[in-house]
Amino acid sequence: MRRGKTDALLSVRGVSRRFGGVQALEEVSFEVRPGLIKGIIGPNGAGKSTLFNLIAGDFPPNVGEIWFNSHVITGLAPHAVAALGIARTFQTTRLFEHMTVLENVMVGRHVRSRTGFTGSILKTPGARAEERAVQARAGEILDLFGLDRYAAHSAGDLAFGIKRKVEFARAVASEPALLLLDEPAAGLNIAETRELSSLIATVKNLGITVLLVEHDMSLVMNISDEILVLNEGRKLIEGAPRDIQRNPDVISVYLGEDECSSSAT
Image (cartoon, rainbow, N blue to C red; front, side, top):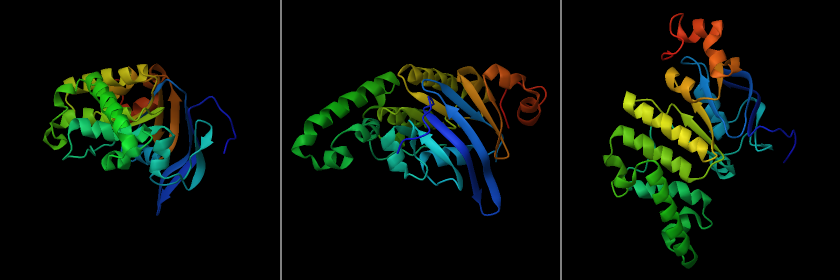
C-alpha cells in the first residue's frame, strides 16, 4: 500500500501508546531522512524504548501510523519489518552464544539470501554456492569492524565490549536501509565508546541511515545530524545538535543548568 508520499525514509505520524494506566507515548511525530544519523534523547521514562519497539514491530501503537519507504508498516511483525530493510540492536546483547562470531554475522546476512537460514542448515544444492557468498561477505564485515581475529571464537566467550561490536556487525550484515541502535554505548568504557562512534560514522558512509537512542550525551551530540528530544512521552523539540544544546528547556529538563555536553540522566 502506497500513499502519503514523502522524501523521508521513516515517518512517524501522531503515534500514541498506552500500557494500562500509563501513557508511554502521546502524539509523537517526526521523520528520518535518508543518509542521516538521528539521535533520540530524554530521561528515563520519556518513551524512547517504547518508540523503538513500535518502529521495530514489537507491538503496535494505539493511535497513529508509521511509514517506511512510503509504505505503512504499522502493526507489522518484527520479521516483516526486518525484511523491508530495518535492522536493530538491543540494550542487552542477543547473540547466539554457542555459535562462532562468524556464524552470528552470517545469520544476519541470511536475511538477504534467497535460500534463507533454514535452507543453509539443510544444505540444499542451491544453497551451497550462496552459503559461500554469505560467508565471504560476513568475513568482509568482520574485517570492517575489526573483528576478523575473533571469527572462530564462540560468542559466549567474548568480553562485553566485543559482544556489542558483534551484534552491531550482525545488524549491518542484513544490509538495512535503516539501523536502529538502542543504547549502543551502555556498559562501554571511554575507549570503546570512542570506537563505537567511529563505527557508526563508518556505517553511515556505507549508505545506512541510523536512528539512535542513547544516554551518552557526548556521543549523541558528536555524531548526530539531527536530534529528537522526548519528555514524558511527548516530543519536546527537534533540531540540529547545536540548537538542542542551546535550548533552555533541554538544558533545564535533561542536562541540568551546567551540563550542556555531559551525560544525561
